[in-house]
Length: 267
Image 1 (cartoon, rainbow, N blue to C red):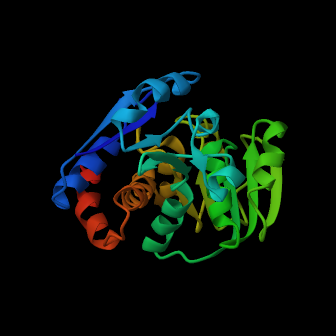
Image 2 (cartoon, rainbow, N blue to C red):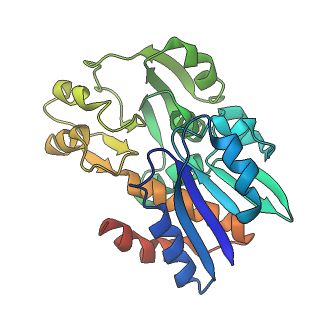
């Protein structure tokens, strides 16, 4: 029996249990995956009391940064970006990493995107750092728009090969000149940006939110002619990468994605 869970707060909206439990059934594996509400500041206590009962744990807001206080061996990637969404156990030892970045790139490639000239990331939290690290070298230029300058250094450390810029949040920020905009903010936080979009858009919006959907920004973006990828694609591909780590073997991710995507679309 493989036991997993997604931790975060709020968590009742999460489609991770549907994804992982459906994958178990499709792969003919005995497994159980659940959603557990764990609030900020409570992760250590939860892990201490429950780690022995699980084989892997998925982390979502607000725990991706808090994870580094755990007695877990984190890889170079998660340490560099300061964000971890995956804890998994191998021979009794816990390891930590982030599959947000690899899942993000896989979702882009699946949609036919292989590079960008200028990318704009909305938000400066754990998911934004994972996305910035993933876009490093994938986009020639990466701009992050955040609400606090204290996160500038952490975001800059995620980028080694691309040109990097950090700007202060502005609700009337122009998206002209960017060929990809990634919204990593909580639901509703970027809604006001929709009022300042150009009348015609030929760029991509990747909105990591999937509930509620569509977001105000995604709806307006689509109305103006722009292409939109929603958070279910990120959920799908980062989840498949988690399963590979847990099972310790390569999976036919394209086949699994084809099976799981319609299930997620209905929910």
